[in-house]
Amino acid sequence: MKLKIVYLLSLSILAGIACTPKIAPKVVENVEAVPTVEKEDTLSGMRATPCKMFSDFPDAMDIMSEFTNYRNFLKVNDYSQAYEYWTKAFHKAPGANGKMKYHFDDGIKIFKHFYDKEPDSLKKIRWVDSVDQVYNIRLACFEEEATVAGRRAFDYYYSFGNYKSPDTIYDLFKKSVDLKKEKSDYYVINPFSKILLERFEAKQTDTAEAKYFANILIDAIKYGSANCKGKDCNAWLVIKDYAPYLLESFEQIEDFYKPEFYKEKYLAYYTNNGNSCDTVDLVYRKLVWGGCNMKDPDFSSLVKDKNTRCFVAPPEAGPLTKAYEFYNEGKYQKAINSFEDFIEKTDDKEKKAKYSILIAKIYYGDMRNFPLSRKYALKAAGYKSGWGDPYILIGKLYASSGPLCGPGTGWDSQIVTWPAIDKFEYAKKLDPKVSAEANKLINSYVRYMPELGEIHQRLKKEGQAFYVGCWINETTTIRAVKE
Image (cartoon, rainbow, N blue to C red; front, side, top):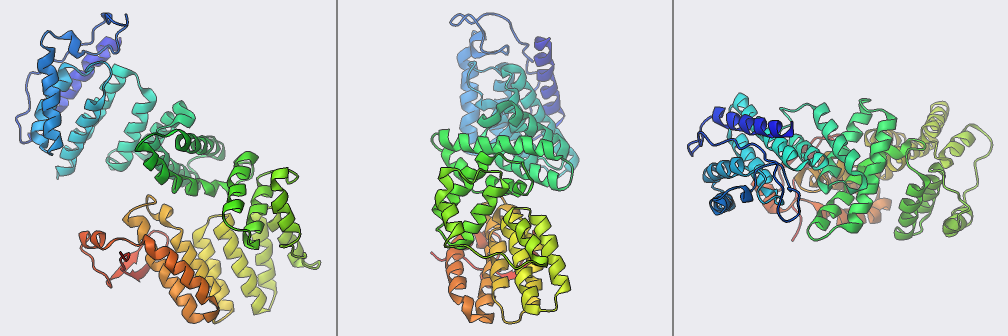
């Protein structure tokens, strides 16, 4: 059965190419669609692939030279010649030497090139179909179900999203991650993390499924970062700055992550971010919420700080008592509801401001809901004039939005620094008491602004007005990072 499948796939991809609009080289006609074979490899006693290999041909050197020729043309971006030689090489020996698989990736690269150049949306479909067939043949030749699913999903997500449904892309990512578990390929982590969160928030994926895959992704990031080699380690560094930030949004769901997750993450945060009482309170709440045993000796220093240096007497019995109990237990939505109830009933604007900014901080630091955090920060500012704290918080929200508004690096993630700095500047102008903090934040984030060359490549210039979308939706001023 497998023999017939590979044979038909070979015919299919040839038919697809023959139907595509003619590009610079003449499309190779009548290339033999080579069926699979079932003879044993003389060295191992088993064939490395059921597909035709170099060793199956008396003129193996000629076929190998076609592989060399197409790669040479591809190196100098001569896609027309690369296409012609790749077509010959691929359809004669899709199994190559039984080990190398780069010719599949090269074919997809070539098809992507002509897909991008094709202005006709209907004709673009033919190139997408050709990409599909290359993956089908790779799967038939090497049976790499998890790898092929991950690569397909990656290509569909970043290159062919207009022609593949979101459900198809999601299901392919799921298959790859489910099969590879903590050894998942690095290139699936970021896009799958983003899709998983978006689908969960849109109620397209339930909590149980989100929990299953988010925990695998956390394990994969840990395993991949610890075991990477060479240039792959650079990719894992980018992943660690992006995917965990998105997956953190699931922390608001009780029992979503194991207590060990909270211990490892927040004990390190406590160790590495100083021992301010804000840090102590945040880490303590997270550990309690995560179900950690606070009698664990590893928490002794934190607990001591919480009970002595950072101790805050609970409010007198009244409407705020329950709100703080919920807050300290990590039951954030219940705490917010209680604080809101107090704000509505009190006439004291100072207290309205105090608890509105507290709600804003809960949405920011604990629930990762940036739009609602900004909403309550602005409410707080409305209750108390000349107060810079709400705008410092909004600036932090914007500055933290790189992974939400882009891939974590590059233009879309860098431009959020502009409205963030706008808010820091406004805060210190409005309230001199926050100048030191504002200046520290400005000096920290100016390093992440886009480079001048990147600005010019986009036909923009410094000082020009620029609208930042995403959830921010504000007009700012273009600025370049200083050399």
